[in-house]
Length: 427
Image 1 (cartoon, rainbow, N blue to C red):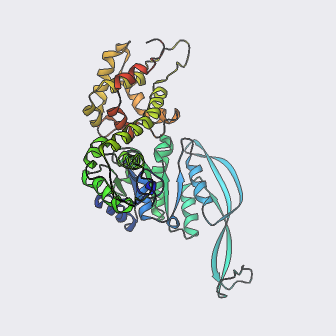
Image 2: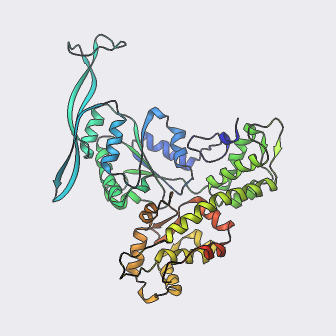
Image 3: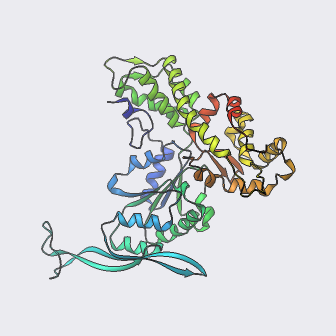
């Protein structure tokens, strides 16, 4: 067995996946109770692995969301993955409550089985008493109700997975949150995967979803959970981590993704690319070299992300921006690591920024509000993927949602990072 099949971060289910009752049982409960399921947490914390573990490919269809995706794009993707034929389609605008919307009118050919019908198409394996027929129906695929009726007519029983829900604009997230209530009425059930750390994210857009969802946070990862991973990996690779597992856990800051990557790199550095003929015990030196390797990998990405994040251009020659992103990163890199892990409160952050800002009197609460409201969108627009920061409304604080960023901050020289960041012009 290859090391990369046992340890590491992968889109495929790795061999050291462990089931955690508080997470896996809740997911299974959501499947049994026929509820929408929301899986959330920082990046690389096991959201996709959870669905891969408990659902086979023939039990779901998946839509990967992007920053430019609309609800219509998502619904069209769902239809394309069904066993239907679109005979005609036309994009059409219509007005709802004075607001102009874009619809996608489609004439769709749907297969079904009916009792003896002379015009039916007989398939090779069909029972002569049940012949395959078709009916043609018109749908507006921009409407959740029309899509629900189409899915019902095709006898659709699977789940629909929306991957990377956090990439969608706030407007699209809000519309989907409203539509999820409609889909529930037709027993069309979704699994939503997103990178955030607050409960009730979708219920904030549509209060009617409260108590109609099963929300599953994939964090935190307990120390004993991480130890089980290397216990499972031991007989697969004939490699033991007994002497260093606590050291690795202390280095990864509860990130299963970082933990998996350090285990993988430790094996590879030790020359274990596949199952070892003889028992090998990972040494502290192997782990230190693995940590240095991952730090280099993460540093190159995060340095570029921070440079992109602080970049801000004036909208006109008469305007001089406040450069809040730059000052936020400055405060972050100077702050105690313990405070960072707890989350930086909005008021505390504003006060810290005013202390070092070149125009402190101009830093108002409304400026901070605008910065926080657009925190995810601004990162996505700057191709920071996955996003690093998110604003948690429930705790009124900024939290890190890229699990590798803690590792990067803890193991890097933050003063050097700050010195290498080029301040915007005018500061």
